[in-house]
Amino acid sequence: MRLAERLELLGHEVVEEDPRYGPIGPAFVPRSMAGVRDLAARVPDPALLDARTRANVRGGLLLGGEVLRAARAAEAPLRRRIGEMFWRFDAVLTPTTAVPPLRTGDLEGLSVRDTNSRMIAACPYAWPWNVLGWPAISVPSGFTDAGLPMGAQLLGPSNSEPLLISLAAQLEVVGRWYERWPPGLPG
Image (tube, rainbow, N blue to C red; front, side, top):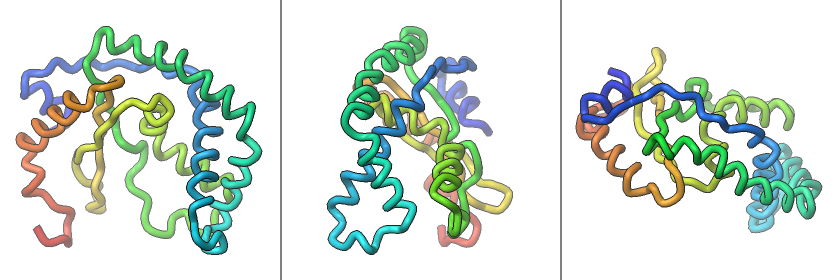
């Protein structure tokens, strides 16, 4: 049973909607690269970093300063634009990723550009919320035909953590997640 149907069974109204994200990508890339740069600075031995991570650190150096300030300045208008949906809805339900989970090694040997493109394409529903700084919770939504776990996420505006945790707990009870395991794992 789909999560939207489970929410309806629990008494919640579910409405299909296409959020108006707008130009959120230009705000994401400088923040992402700056974050990689800042975290990499804490690594005891930078030689241990993957070459792609080191390239993203250099990107963080290039996209810092004015570019990062401009990206941060765009966040408030983006929050207002996207936040309009919360005048009508309490939460948003989306897939956690746009593709099934990548297998270990799927990104091995790819260029920095190809790795970043694959990661961004896989997670188009998650990273906008990182830019907004709003809460989200990922919940189990089933398994692929190959037995890999899939997830959905509940998204909300600022300070909606209690609502999102409550919705996740309701879905956990009705979905009996504690009884479901990927094939091959002990239950």
